[in-house]
Image (cartoon, rainbow, N blue to C red; front, side, top):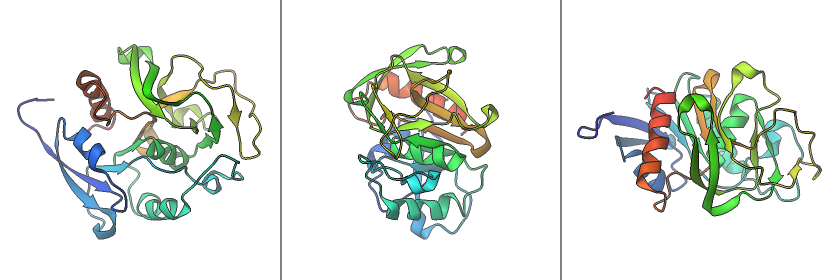
Amino acid sequence: MSKTKKKTIKVLVNDKVDNTAYIKFLETIVDVVTIPANTWDGGTVDLALFIGGLDVSPKLYGEETGANTQASEARDSYESKYMYNRLSTHTPKLGICRGAQFLTVYAGGKLIQDVSGHAISTGHSITFAPQYGIGDLLMPSTHHQMMYPYDMTSDKYNIIATSTYYLSNKYHNGDNKNITLPDNFMECEIIHYPNRNSLAIQGHPELDTYPYEYKEIILDLIFQTLKL
């Protein structure tokens, strides 16, 4: 991607939340025209953006609400209107933090409702799959729920990065009990859902405190994976 000439992309956003930091993050390498969901006429957009916030409602993935889950059903409903019902499955979609969890549920996965050790604003190490040639990278992270794609068939998801170390001492479902983890379980941090053209990033690369060189790595990943 050229660093001297930026292209312009149209980004569909939830106009009821503050997208400023996330748009600024994208504008590191592109110019952005935001398309508010409440005025969107259904025309072509280059990217749909889903950002951080309260938990995704467990009703969307068939579980009871756990003791530590604080969902925003109103936001789920609003975002579902243009995610489930209006966007093409081919439209590139980027989810960060809550947005990553929302896209996981949208793709057919679910969430572990309560984990520990991941509310680390200063960041923790994540490890990329070998084919990406990135290795380990620090990522700011402030979440208590975790993406769980493991009930999906393997062609529906591609785990790009996981926590370098197991940080949680619990993996609770809606009954506030530990789930049975599969043998291949890792604490997922970045997942690509190819059938939904969705990239789900659990951490916070948009933060001003995140080093510029790390932002560029994540942005390259986003634009290459979603073919923007």
